[in-house]
Image (cartoon, rainbow over all chains, first blue to last red; front, top):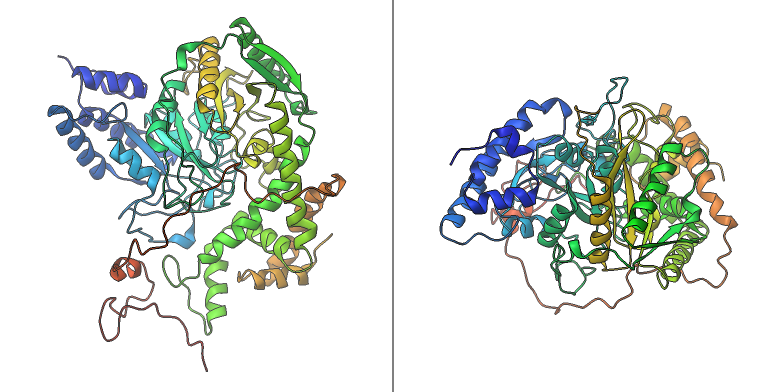
Length: 495
Length: 103
């Protein structure tokens, strides 16, 4: 037996790495060492807030010991993954990318990371993110921006997307075989598109939210970022499941998401929502979308134009609902029980000083917007109005899904942009999520699959949306897109 | 609806976030832009439409109303910000400390 070179080990998919360990070609310890080495070399990306190399090696050795006694746990056992620093991890610094959580070491572990650990996954570290997951470029983190491992032809440093930007960068740069993310309005799918990887947001309720730092509770959902659709299926299988500790966790069984991946898509009906054509959208994205339709038609799908008439109102409704929930959720940061604490002569002054210092500009903006739309006299005009619009958005989807199996759209209206762009205009930044937010508002499962490169050599994703709890069809269609796209480009080696 | 400096000051107090005086004016501009942009929702006819209360079309199970956790005061207080008072001390500790509230 000869041990593969570290670069070969870091280039594997989860599926291939699991096979390699099962065959005894290499150990989890070797696989983990290779990734820890890659993490050190790529430290300049700023993808990790807290690397956990000692913990990783300890868990890798435990995995190898399980395998030696025939107790390996399945496809995730011994697989090195990165964890978005929004998941609470027992005894390991958890920051949410915010100054206000300085020094916070939770004495408990989130359900999703507990599930992954039980499945044998090895945590390499906690990844950088937009502060409290509020952002689309990973530029609002207290710990600094993350660099996308991809560079355009002009060589500028680009954003990896956000808010799960560190997770996306780590997976794209071959530092981790997969990573957890969370998606409130596109925070898994948009960075996956910007970084040339797969990002899956499951149905609301599929993964437990317990132990995930809350942003907007009616929208937040955890999911995997990986380099293949099959990997996303395996990783989601380990993350998902009913959890009595989250009252909105769905009490339905977790299927074997990978089982039907190769069943083909012949006879499926794919909806193409006409409202997703935007003025000023780059022609390459338009062309890739058409290409995606052709790929699916070639494999036996029928593509039909459908209408989701309230699409354009999803984003403004989201920017009422999400900040409203955020202002309520973030009320807990009081400087008393954990994290940053500034002195004040009264309780109010202590709160104001701590929260004034602890929240960054974007979080402050959203908490203030949320406070405003929930305040007396404005609640009906803004918050209730937005929740009515949300009902109409969900109804639009329900109607089209009476007729089609999945929807195909672009993931984002652009490829990755330079760090520093769109910083002076919050609304321009919000528009990044114009294609991902509607599915979030309706709680639907959706996935971004890398499908091509733009003229600048940067990855672009295609986006699929499915019916509630029909991740199996979603993944099956995603697999056929992946097969047809044959996306083999990689950061630093663009053609 | 456009927000001015005083509106921002009031909202910031409601949210218990100290905003430096010189930041109030620019923040009023940013928030007004966002509010102005979301106000396009007024175009949507929502008469008779129920506001969404749950995104999932299902009844969530309830768990039994029983004590399922506890007796972990030291864990709960482990991240408390006042290190002067040892948590779990029967006489002094076991509490969070805050500035004086009652005069």
